[in-house]
Length: 100
Length: 344
Image (cartoon, rainbow over all chains, first blue to last red; front, side, top):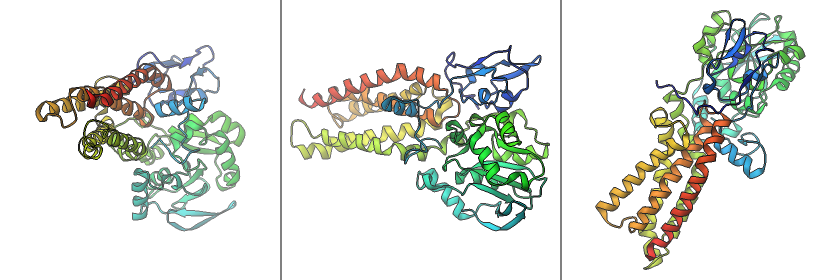
């Protein structure tokens, strides 16, 4: 199948290799193989594949990764803009849910 | 609730044993949830469950209390002995709940304590679906509960192979894909969730079409019905075709993918107007549709970002910054043209 790719040069993922201990948890949790361990340290190998889910940053014991995580959902951004909150897909608070 | 076959006695109390096969009622419930019927009440009771005849050494598999998530897990466990720890995610699936943090560190720590898991099993490991990771900080769970989080495969269907390989996942098991089957299955819920908007839009078009030279209801029942049908067709068409044709629609931005469907509809409308005269009004009306159809389809295509498995918040913001003003401009210009067209 053709690999699905989203926009280039947009993601906010940052890696501080100074802090990285090379434990590899980020590689395990990433659903899009964005990270890899090379020479004992994590490295961003496919930055544009990142969907900013935040799994790597939240699971990094050394706090070496940061990303402005959130749902990549247009409806959530619209709802957030209307209510003046952060993007919110309102799945659990409303009677409706957008995610499958 | 899934079928329960008695209980297993543990030091922490009786643990219900669940069926590892799905019954007709489970399949019907899943089908209804896919059509947005009863899906906000499609939940199981949080807590500890048993599959097979688990012992103190058996693995603990963590799941969400959305019944479809729970069913996806238990139906893969035939012939295996395992514990299932169901978190309270308010009836939301693992990945969405992890994004909100309800499938999260606090809840897993709480549920481990509330179920007395430390008395049920002798080891200190819980297997969490990889897509639960955005809500979990594995090192915090270890620190606060004593249990080590092991991230299992993305798909429950890979669990037997993962367990057989001593809890090692292949790189393929760690990747999220978005194959056509996973995309098409989302179409019904997308249609149902969006229906209230496009039905209102179609109704507006139906009744506004009556305003023009000639008798109001004659216009409504003629050009009005045809125009409303066009609104329904472009909405249903886009909501079905964008997911289905996703990899083959040119461009990466979803607003662009939707735009192609809208342009196809606009081309069809022009062709129809050319061959069948004023079915949809005069040339100015056709010009209006050439703005309205692409704008509508582009907007609906953009909204599929939320259901996709690979779009980032930054990316969606970027495409919206460009697409939404253009969509709005096209709708305002298109509506103005369409409303004045009958008088020109």
